Length: 331
Image 1 (cartoon, rainbow, N blue to C red):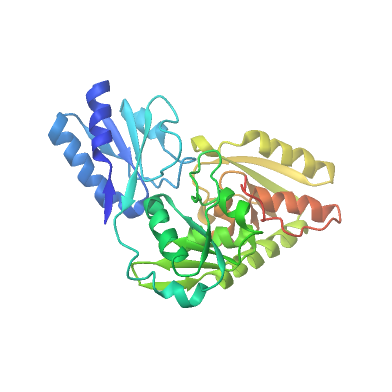
Image 2 (image 1 turned 60 degrees about the horizontal axis):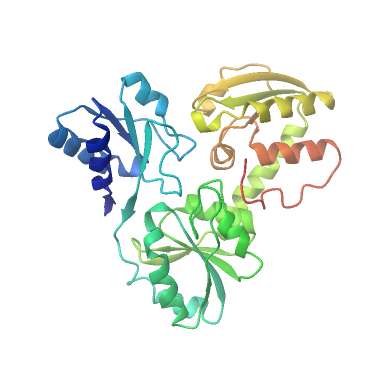
């Protein structure tokens, strides 16, 4: 069950005395966020708006939505990181999953006996890392926990940031991700090129996501070579606050034009296949908002992320693109 740090929310409200607040978080915990909003209104008698739009992480906080509502504080829940605040009106709130890994842990003994693994997780299971590490080490499994960098805590990854996994990849036989998220685990597999497994306490299983990640990489690479055949490119700037990489977009524009390509510029908040169908005469797109949009979704035309676009330019210059996803940050 997800536990939200409501006490921190109450302490901030007591200190700042806002007239109204907003609260949001990942889709999977919105029911718990609804409960927290009700607790806020009951305790402080102020409006607490639940922002229902998707928030994928610290790049996608929807602080603008809170401003439109006139909410003086936005509590973003469930994206645990080293930073308490991002803007004056945004406060990061921890949420953790209190499910135990004790039942599924014994399945690791035979599978990883005598091996060295990198232990990695997401925000909701960070508190379990030391407990799991101790169990594995007591059962002849060597464990590495990579150091965090930037926003990341030790052993933590985001969907597009993999610093702890990259740090340990040359020292381990594989990666073990604590949680349920194939989304995060696939990114780890792609960025490290190491066998990667999910230790899932809900389904009580160890799940190998290596082949799944390889299929994503093949699809991403195919998109690069398809895009290389195009003449007219659409470059998309994300309009969400942490996805506004306009300088990167203009850099790609200049470099594509230098090799004879035609470029049109677009700006979109939510980049979907349906939205892109409205634009005619474009052979391929490059979006500099979120790299996982390109690797994890289906589009009718090539839609490249920043690492893919960098690889595309190498293809156009007849250079090799080996290991283009083996980088700690896909932006």
